[in-house]
Length: 255
Image 1 (cartoon, rainbow, N blue to C red):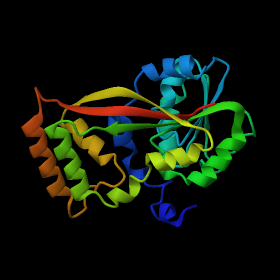
Image 2: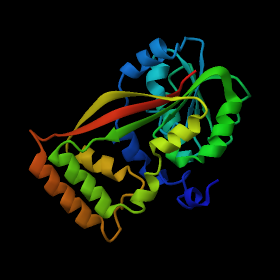
Image 3: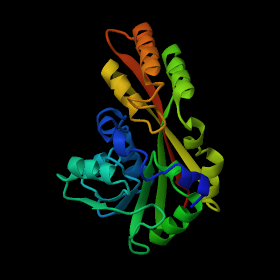
């Protein structure tokens, strides 16, 4: 694995943030499932592997629709939270593996999804593994909820994260050049879906603390950070809520 990436401890960063992650991270637009079916030809018997599945945010809509999803997650706390969330679905399987070594059999997967996790993987090693487990006609979909900066609230919120974030720039390392290289020699395709959350202050605070680079209680900068977050919320809330706006971006390989 890339030594810079390894130094960021990608499989353990969220261990003490799982509760906030489960409660406050944004889900994904329901339209994505129809997109998979209509554009990628996803069918009910398809085998799906959700790599870096975390707490199951991306897997759950697929499982609700009746699909079979094998969730691959190396972080014990995240995986257990996902198992608690998803155990009710008959198509759910949970595995303790990494993206670079999934433990799945060769050429058995129709669709690989990676939601909000590709930047924690070694792209070259993961690519080899994905090519091994994917059927020749299969698809790989990389997904992100990308927070916008199209309002004064969102710009100030982003400035707060930059000011207080620990290794903030290092953990936001996936870019479109990396993604294009990952899919070569096939063309990279992209689709964008709007995604919105309305958050009260506790939800806003919880979402901030769910991020792996944000100081937690006990850190010298924590109180100052929360005081600034309160000021931002007071300034921009409408009837006790602020609007968190995202683009959900999907990238996939052209056949």
